[in-house]
Length: 245
Image (cartoon, rainbow, N blue to C red; front, side, top):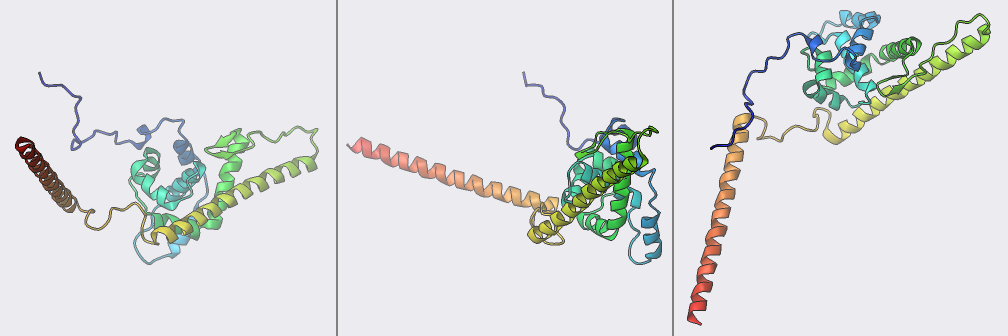
């Protein structure tokens, strides 16, 4: 009796929930970032695009901001890796909501809005720390509120707040600088317009790939056939030699 296997059909249509909210649990970091960014004032970014009349419509600033914040929070500074994750990672697909900005668009968005994004990210980290979070992804936070006790000297409270803010600003600055250095280094390695993991020419279209694979298979089979015939011929010669002796 033939062995029974579990169903496997790469061509089947998957019935994924049409509601993105069902793709991740409520306590996922991406869901948290999604909700927090919705509370931020992104008007400086929107104003930039309101003045820009050239080219195609830009990606929505909220979506781009969420994607960048989430990527940096999980320690992913590379725009190329973010680009790839937009297709392969459920959390990024959740935040992208059907959008797939390429690595150059992601990198340019960060460069254009660097100062605004830095300020917004500090706001997010301050908000999370004040709410009592100890960390946000890989970003460590103080996790303790500054006491509002009247016995605490105003000066000391002010200094504590300033110190916390300076630490957060430093962390954000280092994060954005790392992203810039990473993109620059990868530009030098792969070229400015390549992600680095593309298939070479001749393998990018399905028909071409199949043709090359089948041709390679045919050649290998021919080589194996020649080796087998050569082996059989040598064995026959050896047998004849043995019979003569």
